Length: 85
Length: 221
Image (tube, rainbow over the protein chains, first blue to last red):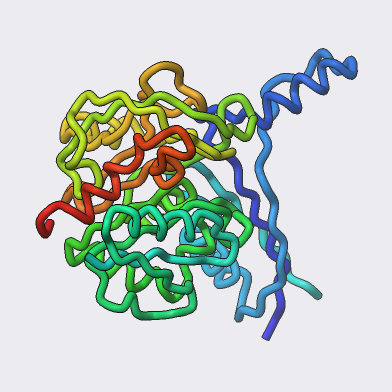
């Protein structure tokens, strides 16, 4: 069965306060990167998965996000799938 | 009155909670997360700590431990369930309570007494208080900022399901100063403050004792 590399990006909802992002932003300003705005800190998860095709890999990764990898109240997720050749 | 206290790897308020139950005349006992039976409790408490090291998100992994199936069934049957601090996070992740708890507004881990107001005594864990009581209770959390959708917040207010509210300052940025809530059926309660750390005169604070008196001494809920 083909194997796919999956990257899941989980981000705090844009409407919610992200104190960690704010702290990073302040630190960047302090370092002289004055143009930086809107820093958000999320997380990225990577794994391999065996599935018949890319669509199945994506469906299954989305199900993982809904069940465990993200919190539906506070986070949005995005899934990126590439076949391992 | 049998009160099961769930113990995860990383729980650290489990023994204190058993002691608080015992102190008001209840029979508190620990139930390990790998167990599947709660051993016929009259109430269940999910205590504070850092279950599974808070990996991924606080409460996210604990929610899938075998014992949580039994806790969910007990709650769905109407049994009284209290989540304290990390326990509150676990109950939210498990879908037994609405909303979620996020990183504190000011990025700090807070460990200090806070002033909270009892907003509802119509729960098995607050019935021994008077509505409007102001309590000083310790908090100890990094992720205590309660968030929920505007619809959920409106529903909580409309149905008087906010159980505790920060009374003086809002330490963590929680929506509507919420420190504790209950579910629609009012048998499941979650709170960020630690009542089990305030049950003895020797620590100078007994304001939390009535949480345990409520559930242990009151007639069957």
